[in-house]
Image 1 (cartoon, rainbow, N blue to C red):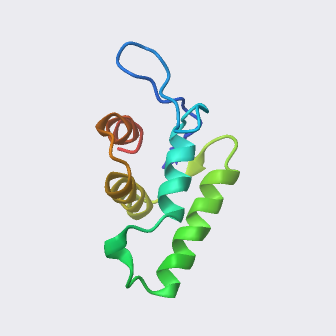
Image 2: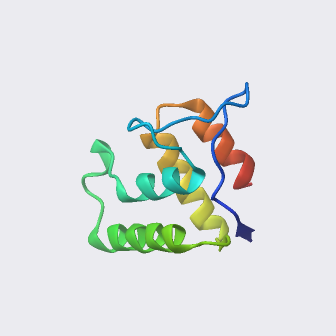
Length: 99
């Protein structure tokens, strides 16, 4: 399925959510950051899986007009975001898009 991830994450009051550096936080940025990061309990991840995540992050980053993702890729992204982002609003907004 095709997804647009250049969506600014909005709070419930309609104000945009900003990243720690004050820049606008988008679903694309969240997905790329989560795919490139590694949680402490993921230390034993094999090289092949790291490369797959890098390649997916690169595809998401380069997608200007949406991206086609498999169900497995959607699950991976959602799980990685849920593991690395400590904000249920971010996870909820992503889940609304990647159904």
